[in-house]
Length: 295
Image (spheres, rainbow, N blue to C red):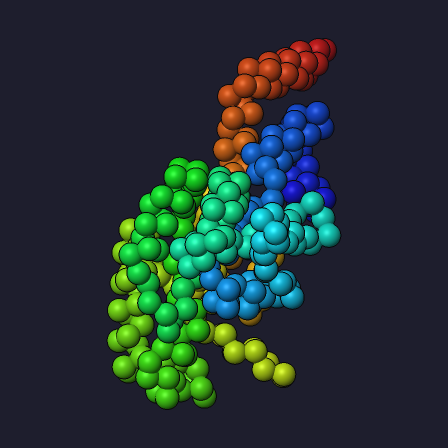
C-alpha cells in the first residue's frame, strides 16, 4: 500500500472517529491481507513469445529466459516496482514435454514456483500443434502444484502466423476468414488441455516496429487476468499494466477488488474491536451529555 493510499485511508477513518492507533492497526491488517507482490508465471516453449507478451502488458524490457547449465536449474524471475511498496513478480516457466533431457529439472522448477503463483499464462504458438503430451503435463505437473483456484489461462501467440498466413491483414491488424476458423480450432484444442471453455483462450499478435508496437488481443487478455486474480491481487497488478494495454473495464474491476479487500479488513477489525470502539464512543457521548446538562 503506497503512502498516498495510507494518507487517504487516515483521512477516511478519521471521519468515523477512529483513533490513530486504530487506523494504524487497520493499515497493518490491510498490508497483511494483500501480502507480498502478486506472482505471475509465463509458461511455454522457447520462442513462443513470453518476453514480447510481458513487455506488451507491462511496458518493460523484460528478458524472460530460463536455462539449465550442467544439470543446475536457475530460477528466472523479474520484479517490477513503482517506486513505492507496490510490486509484482514475473516468472519464466519453460515448457515440459519437448526436451526429455531437461524435463526432470523443469519439473523441479514447477514444484518450486507454481505453488506461489496467483495466475499462470500458458502460451502456445498459433502455428504449432497442441498434443496429448500437453494434456498429460497439465494433469501431472501443473495442476497438482497449484494452489486451489489458481487460474491457468491459455494464450495463443503469433496468431498472424497461422495458416494461411497470407490472409493476415496488417493494416487492420487482424486475421483473415480462414485464419479465424483455424484459430477457433486452435482455441478449442488449447481449452481441452486445461479443461476450460474455448472462449477462455486468449488470442494475441504483437508486432514491434521501430516507431510503434501493434497489438491484438492484449487488452482483452489483461481484462481476463484482472478478472481471474483474487480481489486482493487485482489492484497491485493493474497498476503495473502499461496504458496501451489497459481498459476501463479492467480498471473498474481492479478498483472494486481493492475496495472489497478494504471492506473485509475493516469488517474483520470491527468484529474484533467493535465492543472497544462502542465503549469509547459511549463514554464520549456520556461526557457530552452530562456536560451539556450542567447549569
